[in-house]
Image (cartoon, rainbow, N blue to C red; front, top):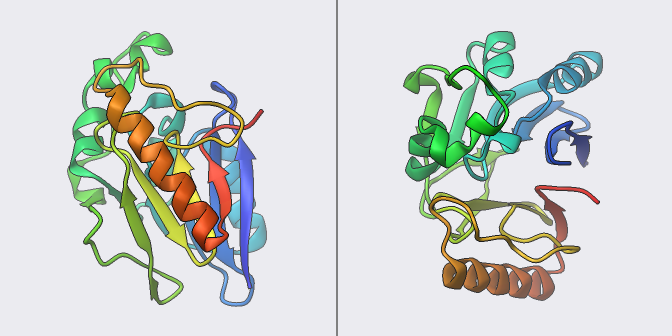
Length: 196
C-alpha cells in the first residue's frame, strides 16, 4: 500500500510530501521545504529514499534541497530544465526574499531533467508527468497511482497565482483548468503545494 505523508513547512505554509510503499519502504519526496522533519521521518520509518521530484523552482518549495543531498548524497533530483535554471536565479526562485546570502544549490550532477515524455518510475511503474506552465514556466505535476501532486499549479482552496517572474496568466489559468479536469475525470487525490 502506498502512503502519502504530508509535511507542513515553515515558509508560506508550503507542503512537502513523502510518498512510500508500506511494505518495501521505497520512498520519494515531492518538493523539499523544512528538511530536518523529513529526514527524521525517513530515518524513523526506515524508508529507502530513491529520489526527489520538484514541481517548480520557487524557494518555499525547494529550500531544503541542500540538506537532503547532504543526508542522502546518492539521491537524484528530478525537475524540468526551466526549474533547474530557476534554482540558479534568485529573481526566479525568489530566495532574495528570505536569505541575505545567495541560495546555492547542489552540483548539477544530482539533477535529472524531465518533461512529460520522461520515463520516471516510482514503485516500478512509470509515473505521469503533466507540464503545467503558467505559475512558472517550469511547473510540473506528478500523478503517482491515484494521487496528483500539483505544486502551485492547482490549489483546491485558492486561485492559481501568476504575479511572479516568469508567470503567465493565460497559461496558468489554462493549466489549472486542465488539472481540474484530470482530477475530476480520474478521481485523483489532490496534494497541492500549500495548506490552509
